[in-house]
Image (cartoon, one colour):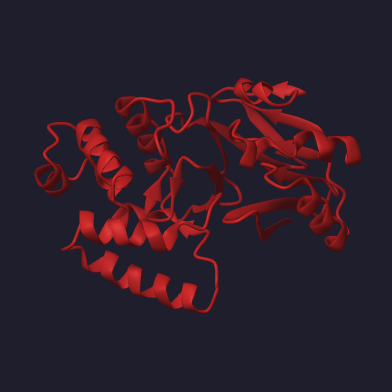
Length: 251
């Protein structure tokens, strides 16, 4: 059995501890706050044995060395993580990592950073996507190019629609405002936005998000929709994505 423990950390990050009850192994999905991860693992009675990094930014890999020093865990991630901390294993697209018998496939989701990866666990119906895609949004394009980022989102779009996307930040209320601006006639989006507002009013998380719902409401995943292309003036999905991303950056 796979257990996912989600908890807030830093100002708006989510931390994830993923635990396999059969083997007793536990992996951190990114490490924004080493002290909080160690505290949460101790409270659960879990020993951290691995870290899986999605990308190199400090609010994702900044706790690697402290957690490894405390636990002796093995760290796996894209080569770019070595900008701030050593890796035990460098991962590239189509590699796999395992937590007991639970296997995660590595997906190239570059664009936010050039080495960004996601971890898709098909047998468990979950994907840990870092900052590549958010509920009703996507990450800023700090290093990549529009065609590259759109290719990454296209790979996410091919996952089973019931897949639950575990992203790294609680940005959904802000994303919902832009999504409503970007796609004002989307009835499914309007219903989603109302649910998000109710959850945040009660200080409830909006993450994880179901991919199927995101496909119907997330403007960045809909850049290949003819109506979105017409509204945003893109001749191709990548051009539409670029227009949306630029608009969100200045929204």
